Image 1: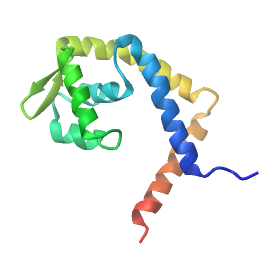
Image 2: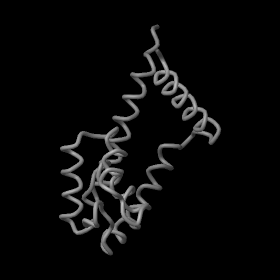
Image 3: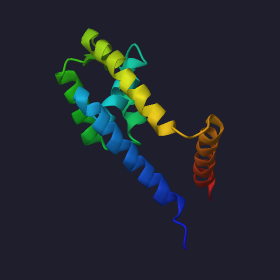
Length: 136
């Protein structure tokens, strides 16, 4: 039996992560992309727009990203702050509350996987990326 290539499994895993996160976060009215933006903004006093766009570019296109930022500002969870964004008081409350959902999600993802195996998986993916980035 032919084993599927790693790209297949990486894509399948990412799709599964997105599907399950979207399901879990739907109770809060947000998606995986929304959470990732909240997480970036929540980790900074002010997340510059260039930092936010640069960090999120791997996850989505600019149109979707700007739509998600608009959604979060429209919900009153984030606001424009200089050349970036920060969480509002309500946004900080929601960020903290949704954090428990995210912790539950992470626990579910890692169920049955030892910390060593998890770290090995991360290390292998990092090595693949480094190999491809330095390939001539």
